[in-house]
Image (cartoon, helix red, strand yellow):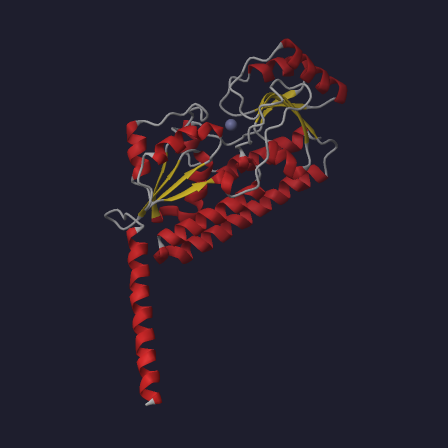
Length: 317
Ligand SMILES: [Zn+2]
C-alpha cells in the first residue's frame, strides 16, 4: 500500500513539473515576437548601447539605432516610424536621463509586457552633474549625469545587463552571447587599465575643456580634476567672457598643454582658448554619437576610447 502511494506521489509530482515547465516555456516564447528569420529585434536609442549590443550579439539579432549618425543626441525627437520600431522590439535600450524624457511618455502609451527594457542608468551607480569652479550653471540644478558610458568600468556592468537580456530573450544563442560578452568585458578591462596607467604615469592630473563636460564618470574613475565651461550636456553653448578668461588663466598658470573639445560641436570656444594660450586643441570623444563616415566605417566605442587614451596621455604630460 505504502509503495503504491509513493508511486502515485512521484507520478503526480512528475506531472506537475511537466505542466509547469510547459507553462514556463510558453511564457518565454510569448515574450519574444520573433521575426520571420527567427532573430530577435533589439533597438537602442543612441550609439553606445547600439555598439555594445553589436559587440555581444553580432549578426544574431536585428539591431537598430534610433539616433541618426552625426545628429545631436540631447534634442532627439522620435519619428512615428521610430515609435513603431520601439513597439516591435524584443529588447529596447535607452539611457534613462534628462534627455530621455520622451522615452517615458512613449513607453507609457505602449503595451510593453513582451519587451525587455534596459535603462543604462539603472545598471550602474549614478552621480549628479557637478558645477566646478569657473563653470557656468546653477548650483541647484543637480540633475543626474546621464553619461554613464564614459567610464569603461561602468560599461562592464552595462554589458552584463545587455548579455542577460539577450540570453533571456533568445536562449538558443545564450552561449554565443555569454562568450562574446566575456571577450568584450576583457577588452573593456584592458582599456580601463590603459587609462589608469596613463594617469599613474602622468605629470599632472588636470583636464581643461573649452566645451561642455560629459565626463564626470570618467574623471571620477581615474581621480582626475577638471575645468570646463558647462556641466554635463548643458544646452548652452555661448560662454560668458569671464568663463573663457578663467579657463585661459588656468591653462597659463599650470602650463597645461592641451585644451579639449567634445565631438560634433562647433569647437569655437576651444579654438579661442588654444589661440590665446598656445595649448593644443584635442578631442576627448564622449561617444554620444559618431560621424556618418565613422559609422559607415564601422567605428566602435573601443576605437573611439583608444584614441581618447592617446589624447589623454598628451594632455597630462
Ligand atoms: Zn550629453
